[in-house]
Image 1 (cartoon, rainbow, N blue to C red):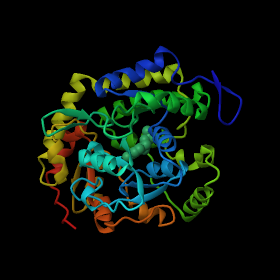
Image 2 (image 1 turned 180 degrees about the vertical axis):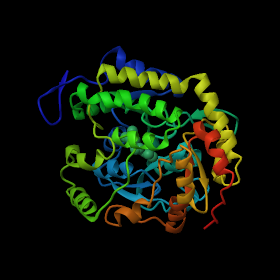
Image 3 (image 1 turned 90 degrees about the vertical axis):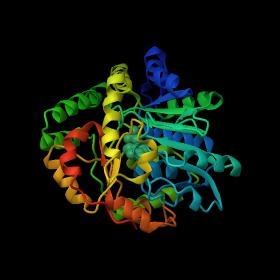
Image 4 (image 1 turned 60 degrees about the horizontal axis):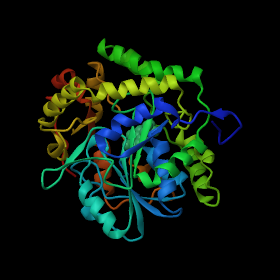
Amino acid sequence: MNTSATGDQPVTLSSEGPAARSTERPTERRIGRRCLYMPSARLGLYLALRGLVPPGTRVLMSPVNCETVMFAAVAAGLRPVMAPVSPADGTIDVGRIDWDGIGAVVATHLYGLPGEIRRLAAECERRGAVLVEDCAHAFQTEVTGPGGERRHVGTFGAAGVFSLAKHPRAGGGGLLAVDDDVAERLAKARDELLTAPAVGRELPAVIAPLVRDAVFALRLSGPAWRAAKALRIEVAHENDEARVRDLAAAADDTDDLDLTRFDRWMSVGAGGYRVAHSRLLRGAVARRVRLVDGRRARRRRLAGVRVLSALPTAATGVTAFADQPLFRVPLLVADRDAARAALERRGVITTCLYTPPLDDDFGPGLAEPGPTPQIARWWARHALPVDPLQAARALPILRRLVPAVHP
Ligand SMILES: Cc1ncc(COP(=O)(O)O)c(C=O)c1O
């Protein structure tokens, strides 16, 4: 037992007992690295950046990204710098990085694609920059080395963070993969930030994945979308000047590294981002993880990736990973919004769009602009990420799509 960061309610530590370890162990065995269970991936990102990178460090990240990645860096007292973007896959274009003053890198494996992670890891090592892998979308991606050896993402950097809300579509949860020598320290830091599980409030997180599966299976796109939103599975993008201004003011106060000051931003789309999970929710999350790791689910996902990656609109960076069970297959299409609407009419909902790029959205005060804004905007405007599990249903629409003209 512990007390919460904000009050004196008792907190059940998420590392306590066999239930917690049973959620961590299967992934540990699969990737070969210690994993710490988190209520969310963003808390894992925050802990890695806070615990492994000195405050004030300039941290490189792709501007085609989930805003929570930037929020985690800002909350950790770091200064986000936008990276050059590869038109092949939306990840960091390693060859174009200006390394001057960069002390850390967050590599987001967008839609499961790790881009040039081996090269990026080698550069980080050579330059003494801390590498944190954002594997929120890459729960099952492996990278093949020159000798044919396979290595799981999340093991290239000082830390790797998986989101169990994405690939396994659990109602929350994350895993922070780290080396044994820092695991205890980061687990302690996590436990100090957790608030008590709210079992009543957890019910949507337990039920939402089941409802979503059922509604999707029944092809009820409108109700599926509304249910997902009501259950806070999908978040509509929103930004306004006040939100940006307030975040900039909070970020400027570098003397105070109290995470609770950033709850408002860190909570976007996942209110319980640092609420400990009860035994009930952890059990539900563990079941989803087992399911997504099962042979049948993998086979279905791989089949979908194969079909989608053969489309003429598939991003060129997909080819090298067409044998991987990706979270989404990004197509680059001329009229993405029309394609999205047509898919929705067929019951295929497009999620995980990151538009506009972070530097356009938050401005230079919070996100130091990247060197390839035209590629970042092109990617954000034209990328159509398709769920491989819905490939068959989407294909009649996807076959007719016109590729986006390269920037
Ligand atoms: C690329 C990326 N990184 C990190 C996160 C954070 O994951 P979580 O919602 O589990 O905190 C998300 C999703 O929100 C994401 O899309």
